[in-house]
Length: 283
Image 1 (tube, helix red, strand yellow):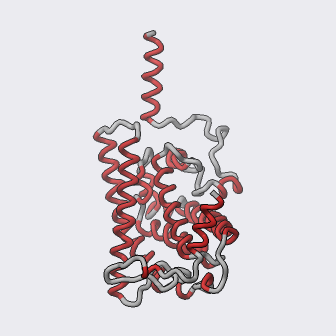
Image 2 (image 1 turned 180 degrees about the horizontal axis):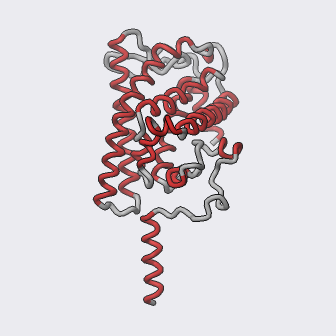
Image 3 (image 1 turned 120 degrees about the vertical axis):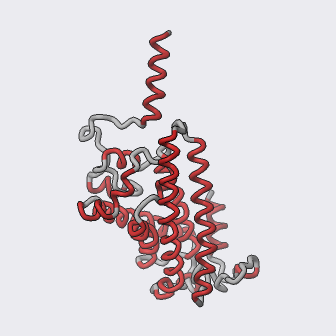
């Protein structure tokens, strides 16, 4: 594993690697060095083309992962569940549209103003820098997500923004992006780019972190692999606000069985348990 990470960081940090020598993108190109940015955008036309490519990538990932998780989920595909999934998908498509526009705009106009822009063009990028940036990304994103999430639960923001997401109690993978567009922008692109103003991130690693965070959130909303207990948040409302569980641990807002003595059991799992109990009675 260490050798693999060393290989990846050496490739990412290579000063002589010009991605345009290996990949051609119609109407768009990479910077001569990925130490600056992941895309080179110099005009409104290139911005729109970049939005198209980024959109195709993220929508494809969003649909593919969500469909795999929904297909493999043990919850019965009842008409109500199918209708909910379609509504989650509809809202997710809408929110992602604005996320893609803002993300691409930040890559184009904001990142070149970052004091750490092009930092690794003149500095070494290795395992130490990789792990420091990973930790800073996770901590900063968790603090940002937690703070904005707590604010989202105040009466005004709940009524106009965040309450829309909580209409889904037993949600599915599509619910990851089934939020109000304003909330999607605050908790998505802004939370993603904020750490880069605290510590120098290699652009490639930075966007890989964002990609993995998005996939993690889809699994969390699916509910079967949910380390921070986000499905419990959708049920109890007042616990498990953070994305990784760090801030919940620090501020004592994580799920507590004493505070919530009635355990949450998803309806699909509840019916499975009931069927097993009935089988036992028959035997």
